[in-house]
Image (cartoon, rainbow, N blue to C red; front, side):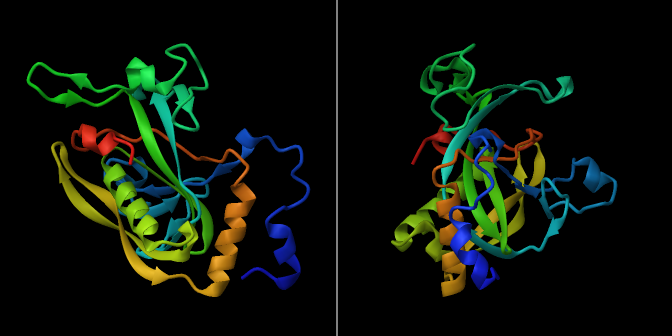
Length: 238
């Protein structure tokens, strides 16, 4: 709970005048998979939720209140070459680097490739659906890509049809085991749990106002592509 004497400074906190928009990075809710070294080493279990920056475990299931939503793109280099970031687009439309294209819509790395057998190969550039949020009361980011995009669409749809500010809804964030073409993997689940209380509404509103005019990014790391093929419908904007 925010002390009363601090409430007026939350929306426009002072002392950050020299902070560049790109300096603001929210820690991400990381979903641990069985192939992660920390799972294999016994530090975590597959399906655990973890703060990507601090390494602290997050209770699961846990309360989720989203305060904003935006898309982004990242073109990762080969994992065996060190997970280097080849290109990125904070807004999912305009790339930071123009070595490949001046717009994501025309970039060949953002397109599906038609295979001879009729299937579509995933774009080399990954789309992320991002949600700055209060997760168990903490300011964290939920960044969903690949098969998790289905969860992102469900979350946005529930929030949109609720009919109020995006932070008015209370959700439960959990995990479940799913079966992919390369074996089982864990995915997020989101369940609507009604509305937030008045205090949470005000805290979430202040969080939204604090980042509204800032280009916030969410801590990103390349994940193993051990899940099932993503269909074109999964990648289409809603």
